[in-house]
Image (cartoon, rainbow, N blue to C red; front, side):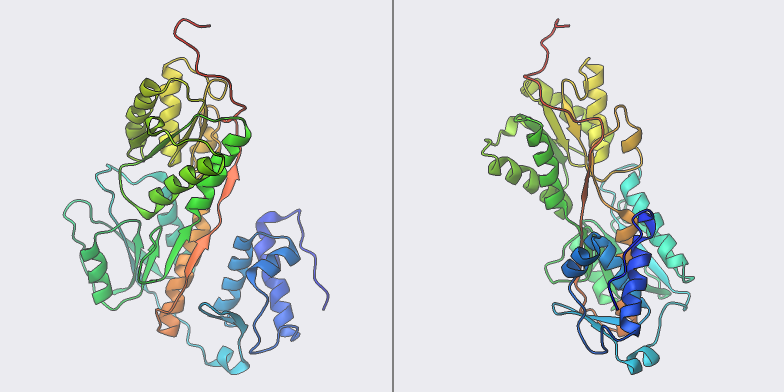
Amino acid sequence: MTNQPLDRNKPVFLYMQLTEVLRNKIRDHTYKPGEMIPSEEKISKLYQVNRATVRKAIAELIKEKLLYAVPATGTFVSEPEKVVSSVSAENKNLTFCWIIKAYGLSVLGPYHMDILTSIQSELSKNNNHLVFQDISKNGEFQYSNHWSGYFLIGELPDDIINKCYASELPCVFIDSKQKNKRPSVISENYEGAKDAVKHLLGLGHRRIAYIHSDIESFVSNERFRGYIDALKEAEIPIDRNITAVGNMQVEGSIKATEKILKDASDITAIFAVNDETAIGALKVLSSKGLSVPKDVSIIGFDDIGWAKHSIPPLTTVRISRPEIAFYSVRLMMDMIERETVCTPTISMPTELIVRESTAPAKTGLPKEGDQ
């Protein structure tokens, strides 16, 4: 069978088209039972789609039992008997527990709410359910023997993680990379941060401030590392006076932005650890009569719903929350069906979204009294 072209006029359905193409190659024995299919990279280049689309198509075929994955090796075509004998956990009306610690925040931000609702949506497709627990108040969670597994979000105390392990239920980590190689879904935070800073560098910015998180976490550390390395590669000295700590929300960002402007009035751009932080910076700059992006460019991270509606619309790094949910649920179901925890970490690509909050750099900020 020749390679089937994908309809570029229907990008939303690209993964469905790719799934059908691969399905047909399995059925006509282009990909033979027991053989390893081409790598994600090769399929991505062959059909000119991104690797996230390839991963989603492969995950769908694994769900259908046409393919199976061998960690650290590759993805293989199932033998006919494997397709018949596989026992599915999809229609058992399972209930899973989502555990998160909000670290003093009054409400969950839009990023985490998007992931929560996306996981609920994925589970509901097969009549499965999700219960929510925020352990911020007393550091404990209520255990139930009706649960079938845990989704553990972000940074959690070791004692909570150990209790989840002790339950012997499947655990999937989101936005947290575990040293013992537990199944997890993470985004390419380091690469996304480097892309953001390189975008600003390409616009001529050299004094790029950074507002990071007050919480030591895998996500915030990777984004800060990407910022630092992008500047180092451009041979720009690291100036700690143009970095400040926020709290991942608008209120904390306001104080951090004011500190940066006080300590370094010559900045021409701000890279924020997330979009809520970027929006807080927008508010401060506006209150001081500074124009974005004429005086200062701003770039965020996550591409939450607010980003495209801010004034001006925010340049940001997009993370696909529906895809994080899709692969998190897929990992969970794979562990239940195969009764194994030998499951890989899945790293989701990010995408730079350029809007109107970034522009070529100007020289310094206007001085007080300038028009």
